[in-house]
Image (cartoon, rainbow, N blue to C red; front, side, top):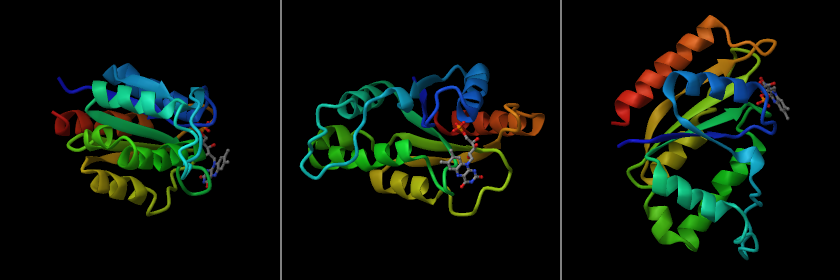
Length: 172
Ligand SMILES: Cc1cc2nc3c(=O)[nH]c(=O)nc-3n(C[C@H](O)[C@H](O)[C@H](O)COP(=O)(O)O)c2cc1C
């Protein structure tokens, strides 16, 4: 069975990205992992962070899910720092936990961005598409969401419904 997890990657667990993730799970039932609650250090060439939450978390994700949806706020025109650190640490899998890293091949990736305006700059999705490509994952697509005064309006709801259809159809 195909299982999907949303990796919520905001610096606050109850902010705009969380609202978007909550709406998506309400229509899809996808599981959520909140990176803000994890202890994941920066990439270290000496692997001094090897005993933090990254390897157990990634192993759990790979064991249990086929589709990974990253949900990130737009911070300084790009993904959140928390998510960038998570991506950097995927390098651990390619170097010290190669068997685990190889198991990403054939899995699916998708991405949700969140800000307060419908003005995402072009190129935002490039690191996701290229990383999926590099890791042998299929990139299913992305959606930009914008939250005004904490509210997900009907346009954004529709975008999320269509996004959910796209990823559930492609990830069978
Ligand atoms: C550090 C930081 C940087 C931001 N940079 C941008 C930006 O470059 N472009 C933008 O449209 N919004 C930017 N914002 C606004 C956030 O994208 C927006 O408030 C978003 O909805 C916050 O989601 P969150 O509550 O999950 O953190 C920034 C916010 C923060 C805290």
